[in-house]
Length: 296
Length: 106
Ligand code: SF4
Ligand code: SF4
Image 1 (tube, rainbow over the protein chains, first blue to last red):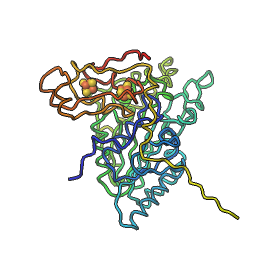
Image 2: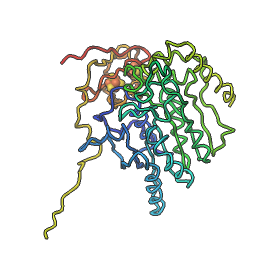
Image 3: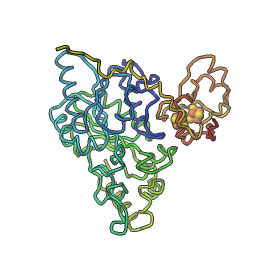
Image 4: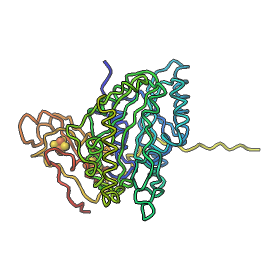
């Protein structure tokens, strides 16, 4: 029987994350479920900057800050050191989409391929929010960012689809890979617990709304994230031992909501709503995904 | 040559960001109406700071008003205004609309 730390907070208030940011919700729950015997490796990003403004820290467990590109490499080293000394602890990486899907992908690929016993948690707010809302490879098609501007020449915003990072990591034969969403709370919690229970490289891709970059009212954070699941735009699934053929969808919306409901709550998609063809294209893409994979 | 050793950046204790009272950020203030609150703890679950405490003290449980007597057996959510930034997530997510969101007065 492992101890239950759910009522303890290993992530302290007084941090500088924007009001309504979803990332601290994800972090506080991962730590509640992992407990105090945990070492966190944190890639550069909003989370690192806003939780460790010198001389303060919000972390009540050992915490290591590394650059954008090498959090998975540093975590590999931490895990190897633990193995060498015979000590046991959860090694958990928190990285944003910039530090994970773009800049840190090489280190992450190496970490998974070498089989390090690390849980990597990607909190994906779908752009470089900390540096001024630049697009990343995790930015979805149709989103406005400061480097995928919307205007006469480009009415769409970002022209390329989101990189399917969870499937890419699963293709490395990672022990456990799942997509998750804190608004679908029981599914999210179960996946964190499951990820913690395995040995080997594990990867959680967690959607995390950003009030500043997604342009929404801070009180709507969870409501918008729930719509990401209920429109089918961000499917929730898990893949064990790299068995992508047997990917298991863990959350089927009872009734799919039209994608407009998600789009209309966020300033970054406002331009799409003026153009029914673009909304229809996005809806068709979502429908095609669920037709292809929805039986899983 | 004399070598002078200085100490690097020292953070005196873990979690000392609690010295930053981020409650000063608040424009709107969530206020729990205990007559309506069913103590489901959804607000506590989603508060990003975290600035909602789960109070398990037996006297607090008993003496805080509740819509029904049996609810008094459950822990009580309490907003810590030192840190609440007034994002309104708790207000938006409360399933029984037990949280009012009012303009902060200072
Ligand atoms: S979400 Fe509402 S009902 Fe539930 S504990 Fe909070 S205030 Fe009470
Ligand atoms: S308004 Fe936001 S910060 Fe304040 S208690 Fe509610 S959820 Fe927490």
